[in-house]
Image (tube, rainbow, N blue to C red):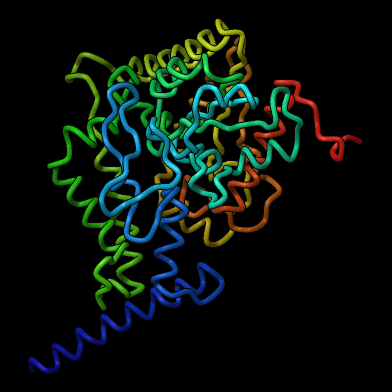
Length: 387
């Protein structure tokens, strides 16, 4: 009897593993090992990821802008400057030799502006802008990355105040991290990531998420950790854990209605970007706000993208739409550029989850942002680009 039960359990486990194997081939249109899936996923979601390390291992609290990257004993990020951002180190004296654009935002901004994504040390956006335009000052256009995964307002506003006198223009690529807080926060509290790394490190949700990450990473190279089943289980648990770990920032019951919370959120968001623009303008610099694309709008999703969208937080798309509509309806002294249609004509898979894109998606995003920056800053095109 016991042998029959054991045989049945083994048969069930083998069937599950075979199912995930077939799913992997279908999703990726080719045969990839669990190890390759793991490396591809972590590299796409966490810029600067190197074997055995991920975002949660390379960040620490920062007294001004909530979090920064840091080098740990086992996890290294290159290049990483003294401010804790993925960017080459620079001295103020060097900035006189280039036209400098500060980029703020969260993980999507970090994917196109963070220099760790490129072994050569030049980000997608810096490479693209120097291909498209002549530098108005010095030898080149320099992208100074001040974005970091999980960044959200008012972090960008605080960071801008710190760097504004060192740069020639300020660009922010944001929207998703802010919009997912719509309805549960009014953006008047410290960013959720502060609680995540200070107050909630001993919470059940934090331990749950770290356990999910360990399943994906399989640092011990165990047989169980090398299965397709383990990878997809870890990926699902990681996503749900991160969603659950967001702290409840709502006021005590009865003090704020849902409507007033949403109204205060929109007012505060508008306040932060307006303060950023006013600060930038006071130094005679230009500020451009880019609203990052959302997977559910305009792009024709491939089969694999439909799967990641359906497994993601579908309700976030409605929040994003509401917040973007509000911001774009305002007549402001600075440009707000929606990137919702940037992938409208793309037919191939670009999204690796419901927020982040692969390298091709990042290059497309960088190319569009480069064109818009050139347009608003009136940059001179390279001669080869002139018609």
